[in-house]
Length: 116
Image (cartoon, rainbow, N blue to C red; front, side, top):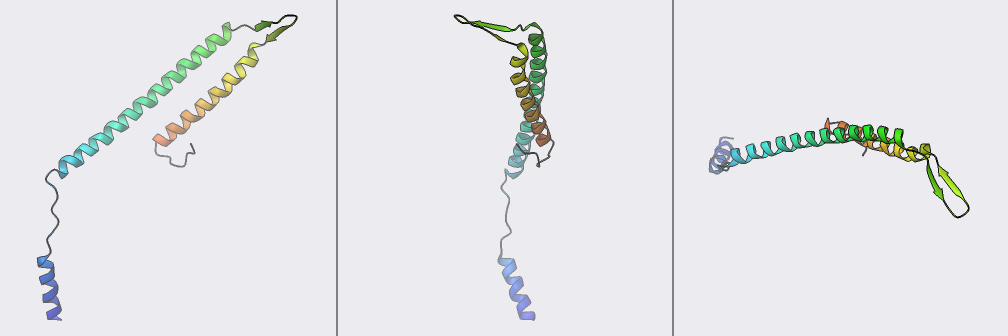
């Protein structure tokens, strides 16, 4: 048993312990700063998404008040398109954008179960 311990201690003493690179700390801190900067940048992008979303809603409401029925005159026919029919696709698009914004917000908060 003593012989086994001697051989084992001899093998372990010959083994070199791994040395870290001298710039390991600097590289690690640089990586941490990059991650923090990317996270702050993503937060700013999310804020811009909300700002443009709100601006779009306000402009959409203003346009919907001033929008009139569209009349298309053909040779013998007159076609009238009501503004409600024009606003329906815009509202559906607005709901899709809101859904995507909600999912992005949940994903940024760490909820990985959000389906994109």
